[in-house]
Amino acid sequence: MTPLPQSTQYLIIGAGVHGLSTGWHLAMELEKRGRGSGQDIIILDKSGPGAGASGIACGCVRNFYMTEPLHALLRHSVDVWMHDPVAFGFQQVGYVSAGEANQIADYEKIHKSQNSVDYYSDLYVGADARHFLRTLWPDFKTEGVDVAIHEKVSGYAGTRQVIKGLAQKCADHGVRVFSGIEVTGYNIQGGQVKSVITNQGDMTCDLVIWGLGAWTPHHWRLLDKPGVVKCHYSDGTAVTKDMWTYWRLLEGEVYYNKPYVTPDGHNPPVLHVELMNTPVINEQTGEMLQDHLYVYFKNGNERMDHPGLQGGTIPIKLGPEATTDPYGHANDDYQADPWFADYLCSAMGQTMSRFEGIRPHFRERRNGGIGAFTPDNIPVFDWAAPNVYMIADSNHGFKMLGAGKLVAHYLMGDDPVDLKPFAFSRYAEGRTFGKSNSHSPWV
Ligand SMILES: Cc1cc2nc3c(=O)[nH]c(=O)nc-3n(C[C@H](O)[C@H](O)[C@H](O)COP(=O)(O)OP(=O)(O)OC[C@H]3O[C@@H](n4cnc5c(N)ncnc54)[C@H](O)[C@@H]3O)c2cc1C
Image 1 (cartoon, protein in one colour):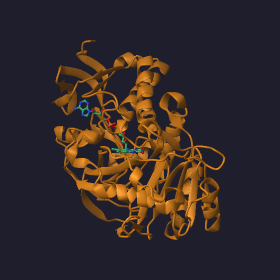
Image 2 (cartoon, rainbow, N blue to C red):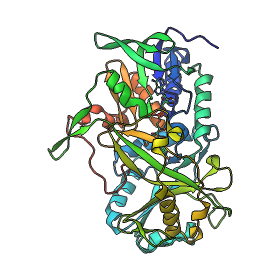
Image 3 (cartoon, rainbow, N blue to C red):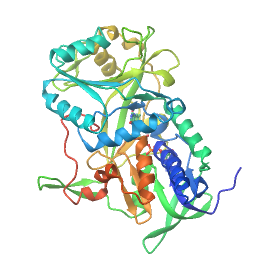
Image 4 (tube, rainbow, N blue to C red):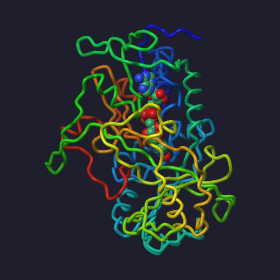
């Protein structure tokens, strides 16, 4: 085993999508500018690459956000996904979102904003939306649907595949990744982190980068940062909020023995449907499960042992405290509730007639996963201390491979305009992102 070096210039903590993407892009920027190489970068992970949310995500890569600055970030991200789609397991099948009349104005804004940053999408309203959906899914039950958007460059990726691909890119550029090394504390002098304390001894470093996912709040506390933040909004109001809020995700898989394809035999776009005024009725009992429908699904691919689909619904808010270890499927406390299987299958059956009666084919397996959300549920990319840079994606950033690219440019002294809206200072400066017209925290 290579011994753990005692010092490095750039230390990245966490080998999820952000730690790995940042390591790879930073190495390329150092080389390009003649300022160093990947040899100057070390990534530590207490378990190993993909041990966090990046290894269990649904893998959806989309841009359906009511927060417009995310649209440009996702355009950078799709550029990265398309840099080597085979290595990253990226299936550019597109993404379709459908809603009711109460969201038409939101869809129009999203469509305009996406296209203004060259993230091309088509918008369909009224009968056109219903017709469009039936061209892709002839059995789509379009009653209630009044609007649809088709993001052509979106898609999904296999989580294991992208972690493998990113780790390979890091290795190709000389970035060293060490597994089983846990950062347990920071030695701070004059406000700067001089070294990190690990379970294998101390390591001095010039710059620390957090790609810590759900473990970010813990390290925030290690740096004695406050647990609440006053969030100022553009209308002059202010609300004090928890800095971090955990949510647990509800996702699962359904076996489906027929090919899940479009009429011309293609892999369909990732589908997202939010009908805010349409209840979900339990197909088996006739009882109402929820007064609104929110579901997303796609071909299961990498995650399945037999053909089927993978999907989910709105996560459940936990609060400022949660147990991060063991993580994901291994944590008994955060498995999807029993009602979730009924909900997912009933919602799928309400969406397309091919899925009516699919409940017996729900795949019973462990499927938990939690994430740490920011006060406005939008990523924070900024300094947590003078030499500690934080990539906190608010747990919807598997898709955001471009964050690491922009951060690498920023750390080299560039000033990427598309990173600016995600600065921590937005909370104090009245630029806290506002509420979106959705039941979900990540729309
Ligand atoms: C079930 C689920 C489904 C999701 N689906 C999607 C989706 O479809 N699309 C989407 O865009 N996003 C999705 N997300 C969100 C997305 O997966 C995460 O936002 C993203 O993967 C976070 O990446 P990360 O690199 O910041 O953190 P992680 O992938 O969580 O990586 C953090 C790493 O840090 C390591 N670590 C922690 N503490 C230490 C320490 N002290 N020392 C050293 N290493 C440490 C961990 O071992 C871990 O490997 C989903 C999340 C979940 C949980």
